[in-house]
Image 1 (cartoon, one colour):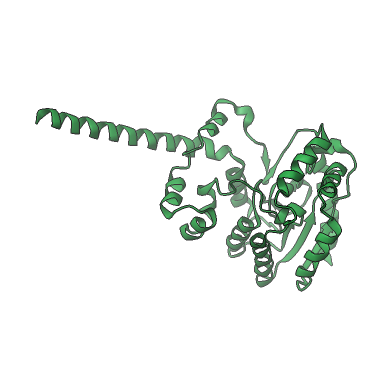
Image 2 (cartoon, rainbow, N blue to C red):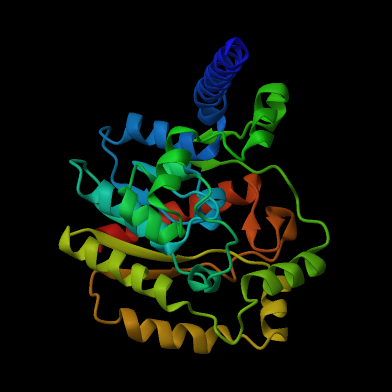
Length: 313
């Protein structure tokens, strides 16, 4: 009997010690790691600036996230994050446009890969996305059980052991300015990178457009219309090597946009700005379809001029 009591007591002590350790790791992760990740830096900066005369909001994936430097675009904020899909963008815009703010223009990406379902795990940051979606929505979108949603929401460090490198290696922290994520890299082997990008992003070819993502894109346009916001759709700069890789795969940009333009033709408040052929200089790119820091500066200055003309119209 005494042995049983000792076993039970030891087991209880072990479980309590284990739970305390989990909570301590969780506190450490939430307090020191999450604030250094781009998702959370961007969100914190947005909340600080959303009431400060913000008029132009950039949203979407890595294209705007790395290409748009708001320092050169007055009254703007870059709310885009890498790997974001149009489903996620819709839920973010649903929250933001239902809040009291001064946003007048919503700028969204209009690239070929914007509608391709190729992300391996776009819902890895459950805690972040729980700010924009309820547990049922997040569970259905991420194919997680409600229990899993809550588990990863309140214990976001689970499965994220590598993230603690941010504490040990400060150099890995991302530089985020008004939501913009700065990239210093310069493209080297453009042809190889472009081929890899095309194979990854359009691995479901000839199915370029995922109907679910297209539906959420159109829902985002409907949402903006209902809130009386102007929408600017942007085709971001890409390298000639990336264009060639698309052509080699059989993807024709003209046909793609011809079909897509028909779907958005009913939205009179939507305007398209095309910069896909803007740059021939690969030194402005970090990879075959993303701008680096220098490219972002030049592009953002040009975009600022065009946006002012568009907004005035």
